[in-house]
Amino acid sequence: MNRTSMPVRCAANLVGLLLLASTCAIAQTQQVYRYLDTDGRVVYSDKPPPADARNAQAKRIGRNSIETSELSFATQQAQERFPVTLYTFSCGVVCDTAQGLLNKRGVPHTVVDVAQGDGADRLKRLTNGLEAPALQVGEQVATGFNENKWQAMLSDAGYPKTPPPRTAAVGRASAPTTTDTNTTQVVAPDAAPKGSYPQ
Image (cartoon, rainbow, N blue to C red; front, side):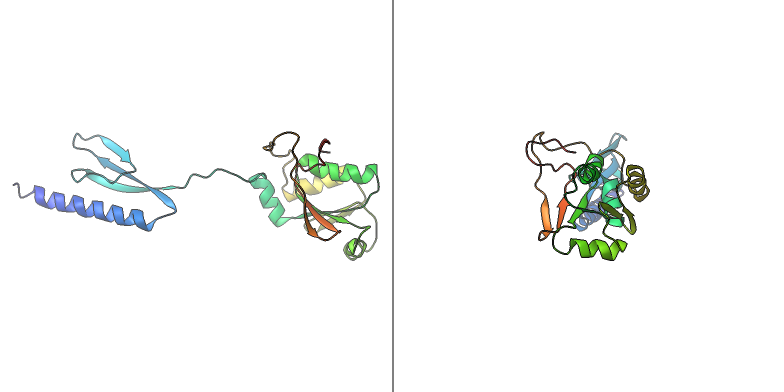
């Protein structure tokens, strides 16, 4: 047996053990190995290198991720920093158009009906008045429906100008979630009553 091959094998085995130990320690990333095979070719593999491999290196590759949320990343960031609340009531075309603007743009928002429960008190505390519809984007508030002003507020907050692509089957709307009895409901971007078109 050749004396020089024994230390090389021991070193290769030690490297292999260290690579294996580091693989077990890192659960969130995938381990990939780069090494030279016996013919001098560079090999990348997710399996530990063989004992006769040269220049073995462990590479960490972050996990692949697929966005499963219906909201885009930009919308999620804007929603976290500048949540949107619509204060409205059954005022007809104006209130329907106001909510339709948010739905068309794909903005997740909370709806407060000022005609029910403490909705009027909440609007009065916010605006010192009872003019609805009113839009709150983070700390900014606009009373009365003004499409240009509302669009500018949403853009300034970072909400995308176009809604995310629809992933649900056409004709099926996700049900709105009630978070406060009779006064507040969280509306999904493409939620609409069954059988109707999203506004």
